[in-house]
Image (cartoon, rainbow, N blue to C red; front, side, top):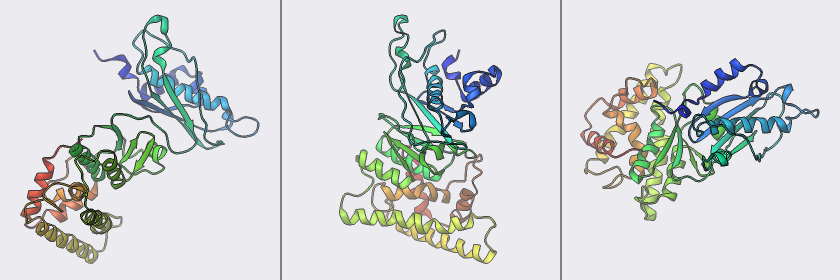
Length: 344
């Protein structure tokens, strides 16, 4: 039988609030967004009922939002048949909010205490932060938390790097069609987004650089100055130059046939050069996988691997269509070598 606490979901609370009608969260318009074993996220969209006479959000609305979202998180850890109540609460509001603003609250389980009936409040240890800004702090963890959407090439970079380094990852999956939580966390909507303790880092290369700083062994970047500079140049070239033609083909409306042919020829020429670069039998910049391989593999693997049948991302189909044709045995060998490495 499944754990009842695991069934505490945003959908369950939305249904419950709809049926209860006049409960406090319903009246206040508090909406559940995410509920996991680690954290819960909710919001209100400010209207007149949330305001004090001065026209800004009333302190009680801030506290009510934070306490409600913290309660959702607590429900995930309270055994069936037990209950709880708030005995102490501290909330920080970062800046005022007014009509039309979105206020987010994030609650995290920081400690689980005794379940002895004489200590009913101990299991409720939690933290809620409600704020108008777009970033939400978390506490230090033995793993990093990474937000992703399915089939993302840039997310695959992080998965590969963490696999090589043996870094455990707590993955948070998002619907590609609903980027609200990503915007709330990082002030932008692209993945991956990683949480390193209280720091939120967006952009795959920035995440890889942070991983390298915090988990230097085994290294992805060469230690020597000249070799490291070469690796950094390759990464920048790959993102700023190599990805240009396939990105230019992935536009609406599609390029004119002549322009599409020119872009395809550029991809083919670089594919041939990369195959020659790999002809010595090692990896892109040396005998062992490094940052260049982690950066390039999620894209270049389409020279060998078809897109997943469930992957409807046009960019990946474009990569396969332009990378797979022709003979590139050294590139193919390299793809299979990197594919065999562990991923988080």
